[in-house]
Image (cartoon, rainbow, N blue to C red; front, side, top):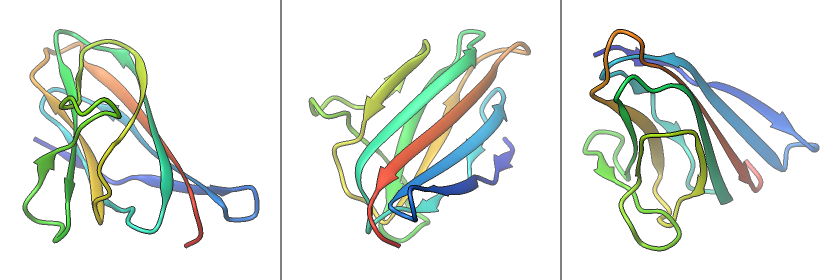
Length: 116
């Protein structure tokens, strides 16, 4: 499993924060980003799935990750292009690819609003 560092971009005078992880492959994880002071969180995932699923994980210590829920309280695990919200407020958040094959190639973009 490789860990991919997120690229961060601030939009609208620092009130919108956009993180992206590109080219996640079979069983890869994105590096966690500090997300606790931000609200209105959404995630956009797209790419070639190759049988993979994407889960979102969170932690308050950046070590012990737990799977996060969507806005309906259901554990996030998607296997097709999607945009969804995250229910919990965790200090650190990351995407993780579960399974897949040699064709798996996913892009994850997270958007949040707030001051930082």
